[in-house]
Image (tube, rainbow, N blue to C red; front, side, top):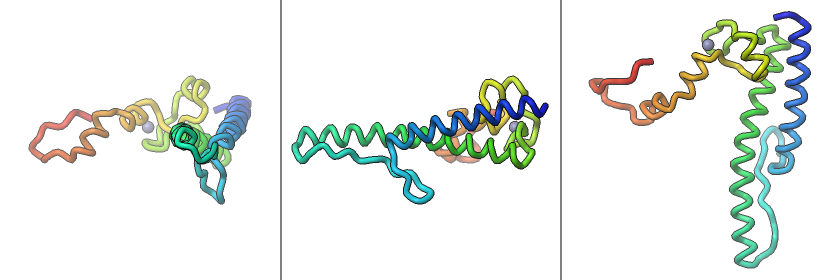
Length: 138
Ligand SMILES: [Zn+2]
């Protein structure tokens, strides 16, 4: 990948990192290396406790999501530093430039990503079917 493009991608990754960290700081507290979702304190009433629990659920979900994005962004930045940016983490093939421009924190090529995200694979892994059961084609 050309240096100029790489510089642009690095810039957008750093922006993304800053944005995600800011959002994360609103729903979670950083404790050492870990993020802990914030448990809101409104008061001791039943209704207040219910809203606290509800908001905590939202924090929990957002935290999980944002942490995942942040991890990918940090990994992508590390790959730039290591000179391996643009290569799929799974198969080592070059990830098409259009994909990287649209989605700079992509760590996998499209086939590997869809393999990873295919709900069937997840489902069958979980199910751990008997060997004789016909499995979906990979
Ligand atoms: Zn791949």
